[in-house]
Image (cartoon, rainbow, N blue to C red; front, side):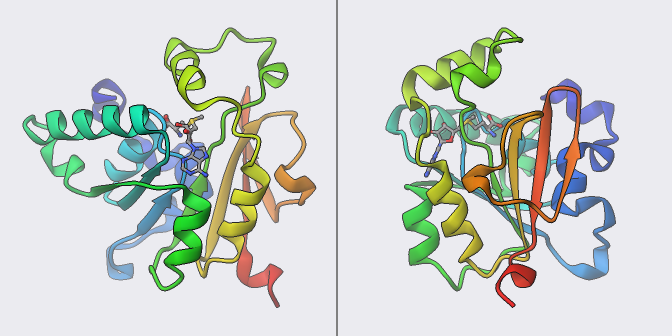
Length: 193
Ligand SMILES: C[S@@+](CC[C@H](N)C(=O)[O-])C[C@H]1O[C@@H](n2cnc3c(N)ncnc32)[C@H](O)[C@@H]1O
């Protein structure tokens, strides 16, 4: 992450563009993002390195504990300013979003474990194998998307394998595709009107 952050150019990344951070101006204030699928915390750290404030949610105790330790370590290092922008919570995100409807945020990001068969062509990274060991397959990801769409965030972003079906078979407003992955962008205000 340190290498990725110091190399710069983060706002041109697919994730930053999907969230809308590439157009974010200082006069817009602080961009608050809820990362509903904590995992290794890489995406959260990447977005926080661009100035966003992150609420990071993770439900698996062992993964939450690892995130907590990593954040404490980062807080004692040259990455302290980035770590300080991340607030970690141990929670199931669907329940947390339903219980916190007034938590103001610009975007919610969702990156469920890809089902095993959707990942067959590429060997999963070691981190992802470890996450799968603890987190399983995240078969309830459709319900998490629904909970996010019911929350008053302006955008909901879902990371998918490039050729996979949309979550909950719900077509996004637009997608940003890379070589292996795709970011589906939903605009709940348009869906609910
Ligand atoms: C593929 S990983 C996310 C990877 C992450 N984007 C990163 O940068 O490392 C999925 C993670 O989301 C967590 N997760 C899935 N559904 C969740 C839910 N409803 N609430 C909280 N955490 C959830 C899993 O436990 C797992 O740790």
